[in-house]
Length: 478
Ligand code: AMP
Ligand code: MG
Image (tube, rainbow, N blue to C red):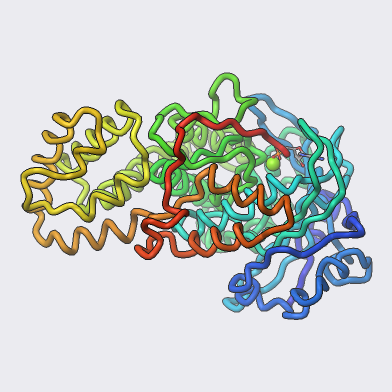
């Protein structure tokens, strides 16, 4: 293992060194072995609960320079300078087999100077939701942090009810958030801001350095990556739930999973976070919020780029988002080209799903099995307004046939329309079993989510939509 502590050393005055606070009964329960292999981590960590025990040893390589990072963030639109890693520690960076440096971050590791009133812990429920959710996104092709391993314990922590504490190690190219830059900008510490930029350029965006304005090139890279990530969230019905700027990664990866959800029925203004009373982070507002967040981030670039350059750069968000979203959506219907006909079919399909409250995932998948040479399509029975579907089907099958090879279109659809999605009710089953010490349900769900487009999952328990479609509500920061 090649371990470094570049963030902790190069930005030492922006972090606090802290040992993880490890419950005595910490037990390793889930390991992402393929990911551990990519990171060239020692196999012994996964044997006989070794890693859980080593984390309690302050001489262990991962604990020697573990740090809490300082950052701020716009939370629900309000600037909060008081944030930072309140329950997570950056353990260091490891070099993966492709020679990229990847952060190892331990979540739920105890109190830090940024814990405020919090206990520094994460509960099993939310930890398992993050563990499974990030792998689910990854295998759908959506940029995200990854999950390496999960531990549980019998230590009780109080949330709305008492729950048991858990920890996970997650990985990401870095844990640098929009809120890192915002914090050093708003606190007026231009020396720290400069060092943060330098670290970010050198280790994460070296290409920007060859641009005549590296800061503008960095902002542009963040805008483009964020736009593409959000396009995929919208295309796959993913709701993040807490898009505060402290939960936004400069890498444009999905980050800090809280009350996230994949929609079941298509509800365009769906909100799953029960503290989000205004619906600020509803499904349909995510693109607008992402741009709002990029505007907040761009403030921190104002000493380095003129206003017009910043405006021009932010204006790249919308066309990038729209083209990535449209391309994915027309592919989901089997078309390669974004044109008026394919877009009209996408829009009408989504309108039917929304108006008739149909399942967002299953109907895309089922469509590839329908024969465009047939005038009537059995999928009509999945809709309440069959006539509306029949009219759509006539135009849809005509366009499929006009476009040529309908078998190739069906193959394209199967490669982008998942059979298995990390739906909330499946996550809950995995959580309930894990709470009883049984991780077989979580492992079986993860196995399915690792190949979500594989037809072998059709008809299995993991392909199912919930029986009752009551909208769930989930809590933040648990
Ligand atoms: P989140 O909503 O999880 O993104 O967290 C927002 C802020 O609250 C971050 O600074 C977290 O580190 C902190 N935080 C959340 N939960 C806890 C906790 N249980 N103990 C300490 N800090 C926490
Ligand atoms: Mg957070």
